[in-house]
Length: 338
Image 1 (cartoon, rainbow, N blue to C red):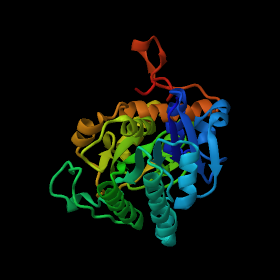
Image 2 (image 1 turned 180 degrees about the vertical axis):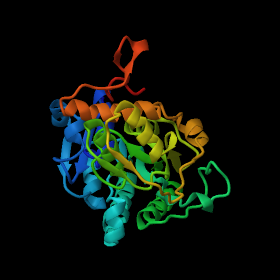
Image 3 (image 1 turned 60 degrees about the horizontal axis):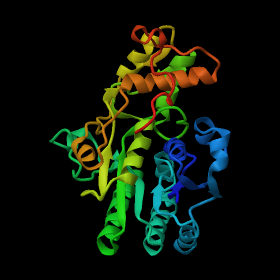
């Protein structure tokens, strides 16, 4: 009998890439998402894949209705990716309680009552703060939370709430603290600047790059989806939340990389940095999940650029003589996730 997985926000950025892998593995998928159309799934999933997904349109229901849904579909694992954007929570604080805390608690409660095996959910490196606040680098997985935003503070609280359900009720929960996730399909949120930068260079559009000296842990979306799969399939882990990330680089370095492939690009790179946390200890995620980035920064940026060029009807770039002049990792689907 096929496993059934519920994915909230399944047609969003990370969710759509995760759905593609779950469907490829023959998993039965149920999705709750407010945005059925006009979302990342339009770019990431085929029409056949979209049609094979059972969908529930709208907000995440309350605990009682959600419990019935989990039981009706015999859901074994819940992946909770739905969340308002950090740019929204700062201007609309009510979204923190109404769209972050309340749905998360409903998912935990319904999963407990329906005896779901595990809840994997999206936390964020936003629970941390600026690099100068941490004397020890890389930042340990269990470092103190010093969030700079309401979004980060809410994720910190949700880590504590999830731990409470794990400690008191034995519900298996694991939060994944995603770093800066980029790649084909990213259209929203603060990380959208990665799409604007990469696609502008790839398509010959001018782009202003602010705060180009800021460091980020650049996590390609396929790696983000792969980390979720690992969190779903692994045995019990010692931590209730794990930081998962990617190669560390400044935006300036990425812009320079793009300039080598697209020398005619018009990138206006400007100085500036906010000293955000970017250097995270990879050991806990490797030891407990087996997760390490599988995609180099060069591969991920080039794949994102070429995905945009292919959509626009342009030839991919990045020729590799060692591959007999085939495009070097031009298609995000070229390498399947293990």
